[in-house]
Length: 277
Image 1 (cartoon, rainbow, N blue to C red):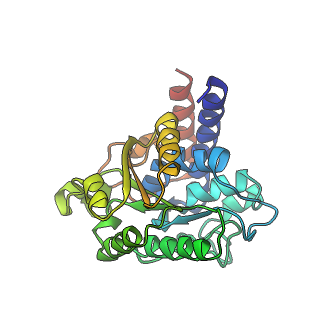
Image 2: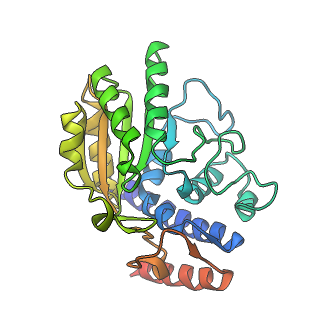
């Protein structure tokens, strides 16, 4: 990755983080933790990797993104607004009456959303089904899926993993957001997410383990994955929950937090100062 591309991605990620904080503060609370931990990934996907058309969100030949951890929607909403799928002003309507931006992503309400999330564990199965349908239709499009580490305690995730490996679904590239935290605390204290890379490899996946806040490592893993045929791909990203929302960094209860406009302004100012160093 050249210097100019890296600087562009860093700039867009910072702007996405700011817009995510502002979006959540417009409602007063929200799932800040998991939304912030995937910002580098969605920035890379939408600025470098995915084949999409904001003017035609239902374009049949597009790549798809399945946000299985659908409560992380605010950062994806920020990205879709930045890319022109809908007006930036929508970000001020998060979870309010009549909004097109509900707490959990909904493909019937929001342009650019490819999967309606709700109960955790379902997204990876949906992504598998979409990828299989695209293969049957002989399309070259990829399906990208983002799964949480707490979510990976669901049995449905592993049923999908088993089938994807057996069917050699190589147009599916999934990511596990391994931030070590979930609603009720640390995954280590609930169900530890040990040896995920080896688990997926056992099911026949091509698997990688990276720093999920490094654009260079994200790019390298996706590039390698696309070079491997006959296997689905899992990229396990070590991330920090609430990365970039400084009041939530390192806090145990940062799954969903109150974010007032005043707190948001202070957090954004602090984030900008940190990024300038």
